[in-house]
Length: 329
Ligand code: NAP
Ligand code: F7E
Image (cartoon, rainbow, N blue to C red; front, side, top):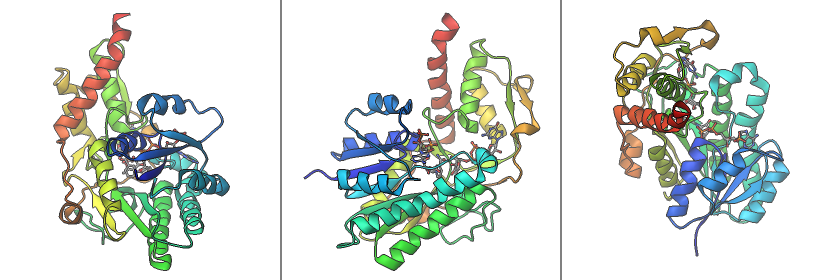
């Protein structure tokens, strides 16, 4: 019998990579899509036609219950969230509801659905390095004190502890992946890496003059999304649910990302192409993130496969290919 998986947030970057990974492993995959006419539905249908789309919303508990009844999943991957940190200050209440309370809605739906056998459905929660915020230890590991710096980070802390609480209270197989930033050509253009790769591609093709950014000194531990969804799957194959940090163990500044991206298109001096605007600065910044993923490497046998330079190169190359037809027109 093929295993069955339900993915919330299937239209997002990670949902798309995870759906392909699970299909390739022989799973029957169900993906939750919100809204009555979501344009991303067509995208996931093209990307992974094997996925059965179910409609639902993390804010609507009965839709989650219905999705469980239809999918009858062995594994649930809760990737849905309002995930853009910058947006979370302007929409703090909504972020708390979706990114925080939404986790509780999903956990509670699973608890009621599998009350006869609490371990029957394995649950993955997409926790985040943003929970470390004002870092209390370098590098950050599973035991590092959490100090979130944004409404998004606070909401993720709530979801993280709820996941642990449901594991401890009800014996659920619930795991929390504390994932550091992971990127790819499928990354949303609101995030700094994709914003840069797209702009650099367009500048190199003569389609754009400058890119406007905020804080260039922030440092992140950037990995490849394809590697990180593999870690999610590995967590749910363990005998017990647990928490794992997933990271590369390397940190780079936004400035270094710009160096590598512009170098990819043969531009060494990029100062004249970059403008800074306070509008892109955050009310509270996370200055430095770097993770220690020793536990995942030891227990899950997980390692990242793509270097920082390869990742930046792949993103810029993909955006050059995407934008080239516009330059030729
Ligand atoms: P993403 O591209 O922003 O995708 C978010 C997904 O959530 C989208 O499919 C979105 O649907 C869905 N969604 C939003 N609100 C919803 C709601 N109310 N009900 C149901 N679905 C809803 O995010 P990602 O980069 O793939 O990240 C996946 C998860 O990992 C997120 O929880 C994120 O917070 C977390 N995370 C990401 C990173 C990272 O570096 N990428 C690191 C740590 C943790 P629409 O397409 O309809 O908007
Ligand atoms: O910002 C700085 C910004 O928005 C990275 C999400 O997936 O990873 C992501 O959150 C850094 C920040 O990602 C611009 O101030 C400078 O310091 O790409 P980002 P994020 O905030 O790290 C975590 C792990 C998640 O969980 C989240 O869901 O870049 N920065 N200038 C800028 N950032 C943006 N977006 N735009 C700029 O113009």
